[in-house]
Picture 1 (cartoon, one colour):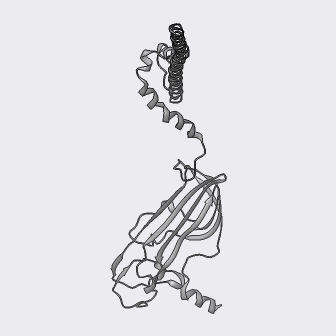
Picture 2 (cartoon, helix red, strand yellow; picture 1 turned 180 degrees about the horizontal axis):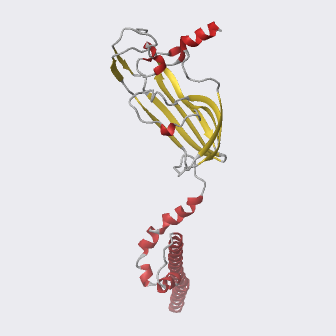
Picture 3 (cartoon, one colour; picture 1 turned 30 degrees about the horizontal axis):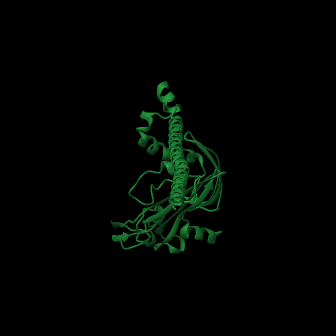
Length: 293
């Protein structure tokens, strides 16, 4: 009985020892494996940090090259190209923050602008104009349809033609508004102008009515529309208080098609085909001459 009990106890001890040995055998590799995996993870993180550090150094070097700056002394370049050291890893913030946006933005300088993006294009739209009240007292006489301008052909041709003398007038007909545009094209800049005032002429003479002054466009050497006639030089038109300008000076806007082969600061040449006619006032005397014929 005792012998069988001893045998049983020995077997139990043997089994426990065997289980302990087996557990030790299995647990030890697992611990070793977990430590190895941690070391591998740590090493991979270190490698990634070193790779990021090298990339940031290369980005900074490219940025300095684009900006035309010197990269620094050779020792700094060698440190930038070498492996990351203790001093390199101690200052990661400037390397990460400075070049990231600049390196991305630099290649876009020559890219095609996106829709809605502000560029240095010559496209422009200019609005201009003014509201004006012109008032005065005329001691003499003038055609009532031209009461607020000095137009010699509208002065009385015989005594008291436009009686009575001495008239007070007030007018807003000189108020003006205009739009100018400029658009670059492969054929040259397309320039347009549209301008109007409230000075009624023709069938609207004497009225405050819409009156176009300029409706003209040009591209390169060619232009078409209503604008200043080539027979006058608007550049020498003096600044005067009187709206109609000097009585002996040509001031004429006409519908035309023009060619401008030479345009420079030294001089220009303009050839135009204009609408027949003129702006001179013929009046009743021209009609009487036609009747005498």
